Image (tube, rainbow over all chains, first blue to last red; front, side):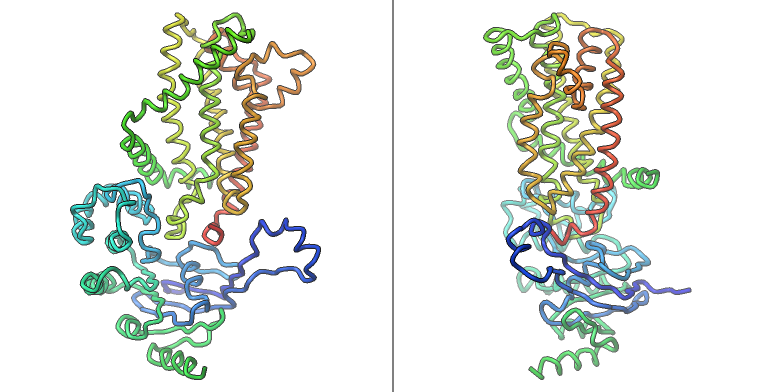
Length: 242
Length: 260
């Protein structure tokens, strides 16, 4: 009997060496030890209740993004398992999936469908998506003519129009120019209202605003799990020790 | 197996939406649109017909060379482009794959369906050739439909395998066009299966494409049932290839995001 939205159970992830290098005879003959791969995450366990907001703090390379990808299901854990109850969505790799040759409008459909919307649902919200992204004049141009800022804006607008119960955020709040960022922050707050959130960030300021709990990762291991203020203190103490 | 099927049915809308968008957008971009798809095989047919019926006369089962060739050439080009393009499917959709855990085989189905539409357009060329030579297919022509199904199973199996394997080891995408080019000459496309020397026919029959191409010719041009032994072999190979392709894809799919 459990009602968790997300259960992360003893998750570990090992990145295997590139398969093509298995065939590299030079390496096989001349390097003594076998290459076991890179252990990115080790024995991570925590639970998130519905409606809870959890921040994942850690330095670059501590495994934050890998953990997020495993929770999202984009990549599979090497050990342990993740159980998700509810529809999961995320603001991750915004605009990365756009097809360069297609128009913005076509890409809204392609991307929306991949993010789990039905074509009819997209028909209903497409005007809102375009309006929010402020790309009315460019929406029928191919994506290859967009600036990187425009792509992120469009990606962001699509993502916040997808309905989901659990939302994963990965440093997304650096979207567009100052004015758009303000608008995005506003929209995110309304969008996130009442949802289960996992937020990955370096910015302790944003984390404080959005999250109640915190998890700190260091070299792929979980070193702290608890209240957000304590987590931030713990993380900042760690950094000051250096 | 039934679980895989129900999964596909569950994601039917997803696959249909993506396919339709892909097909429409493809034709919006070029001036002549679908005409291009037709021009390539027609051009190839004209050149090959000149070479093999005027310069080097090849026996063509008592028929004019152009329809004889076209009946096998079109399915071959369909197979060729679909398999050739498959190695890029996963790699070129890296952005989407890193973004969300969606039903990944859909990407392969989308590619296959857009290639199938292209193939459908090229059949207009076949109709033109048939009209020009006054060929009227009989009732046995209906056999070409199950033969096409077998061919599509084989194609899908290879596409699933190659798209997944190429995400991990890029050599697959480099080797595929070479093998396909050899395959074009080792399959009875430009010549008839029945004109090769008897001692080589069993070896030729090992190629699963032999039964398919010979079947198209028998049913569409000679109004006779295909060689069922050859066809059964093609069918078995196709089922095995499809099974291997599906299992490989589902195994490798889990960690696509790590390698692309």
